[in-house]
Image 1 (cartoon, one colour):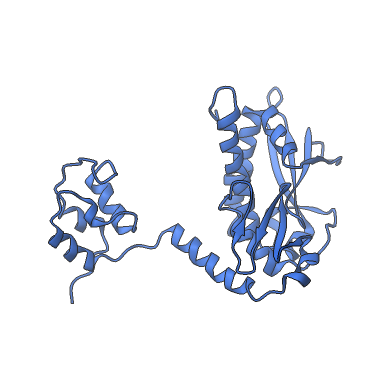
Image 2 (cartoon, one colour; image 1 turned 45 degrees about the horizontal axis):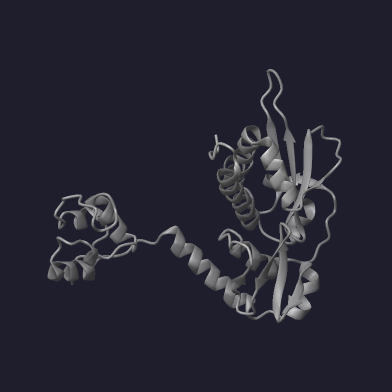
Length: 273
């Protein structure tokens, strides 16, 4: 039995090491790593003899990547969603039926979920939304919003995600609001945000609906002399009965990424910071 190749250095050893770039990546080492990740084929190297490429190819053990895990998760969820009765499910989700598909509103835009779990939308299909939508269909109990706002970390199953939520969702949105305050709040209103009057003292408190029964409350305190700005994203207590913590994290991260792209496109300087 031939020894399996699990290290890019073993592939790199067989390459010409010219760093010619003809394979589409800047260096032979990058090409070796891309082959192991399944992003490139050995035949893509113009200096590697076909016989050697074939022999190496039989030994390569491709590493799993995040895209593999994401795709596998979607396929598993799709099989479960395919067993659901959309007509009885729609009222519980706050969705509606459109030609046999579930129309679920996300930030003011309709996303259609097909009976096979596929996703269709007239707007850009942000890949962060697919998994949360599938989980929403499977987990949502139709719990109505209670008006009790809690931090993400207090939700069931949020412990392993809470630091990520803070550093990759709340903090980046705070930075964007500091650098592009007018544009960020214009975007929030464009996606259906409504002002909320609370006693917390935030300069801005806005309610948005990433999913019909999963509201986010965004609180932002503007910087003052001697004090940095603050921002938090709170969830209604009902969220724990309508979706899971992982999906909330994905939704928030998707919103941040969408805002980043829109700011790059529409800010006067064409840059984030």
